[in-house]
Length: 305
Image (cartoon, rainbow, N blue to C red):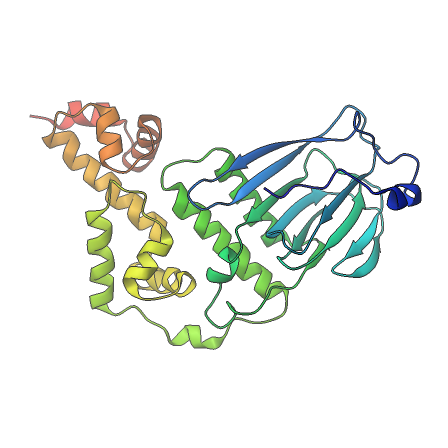
């Protein structure tokens, strides 16, 4: 996994301020990996002393990385995408995107609200609209893009504590990040998307696939492949056709299937949860209670003859 580089060569070390952190002072990191998608998360664990600078260095071979940082009130400087830069002190939350093929050397003061997301090479491009998937995304440095930051925070929460249908959520949030980056780069999504629809026969094929795979970890890319569309276009046209997102539709079908099994089957709740595609009984209970207004056990007791 890609993480901020904690080493400096002798020349750079001589050029840095005296208060650049040492091994004893520099922050540590908490790491999480979403095994199904390969997206990784790292959180900065801030040391006791918070006025130390650190260096984040990346080379061109490393994957796409999106970092969210709340400013510490210290300036940041270095070299990004081959260009020297300096950013004035700020306490704002900002996003930095370093795409694959971009080198960087950033000196900054991280806070406990700093985290980064690494995306496997090609993932964000494949989740982009067809018209942009072959174009490299441009680097973004310390940008206060509220929507992009919200998407990253939502993805961080899901990777750190995954729930049911986690792969679909991670793909969906990654797709949203990809689109936000494309728009931020001032390359509007091609209006050909407005002319793409989901015919009834393709919609039926997707619905049949979902119904036949409720026990499995259904992914957005799986459904898009069944429909013969990119994930970007599929998510949009599926919502147009059904009124709900693919994630919401799969969740609702699983709840509906679980209602039938609760009345017709004697499976233990833990087994029933897995049979309906939930990661655990606790996830099943939480989702069912929210959707139906009562726990699965109570629903079974109240509705059985």
